[in-house]
Image (cartoon, rainbow, N blue to C red; front, side):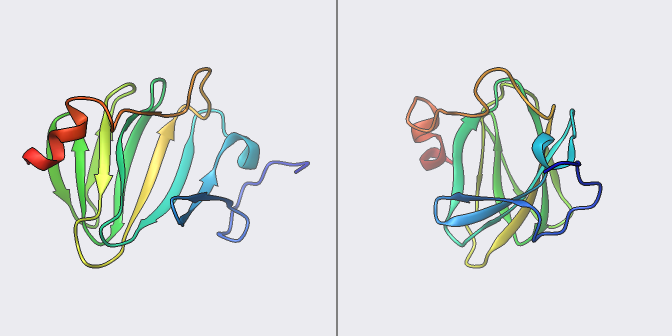
Length: 136
């Protein structure tokens, strides 16, 4: 891409295949030139989710567009519905699950636009995260 986009259609979004679903990155440095922002639309099919993980250098907002999600921020859980938001500070463990019988769609907004270290660290196999959901 020679010139960063100011307007992005879903067809122009960066498509990321993740666990059998497609995430649509609507804003990333390589697409729009954004330095301080990343935006991703993700649909979680019924029973699916994004297990416990952290973004060591990025803060994140999860905004629910449709359906319901079981959102974890550290060891606190809430059921979020359309229009609800969770804010996750950089380095805080979190997870998003769709425990309903219908698809749920979220918008993940992350800042800054890039990190020097890993984008994400999966901690779902580590204590207490590997058993936290079963205790809830």
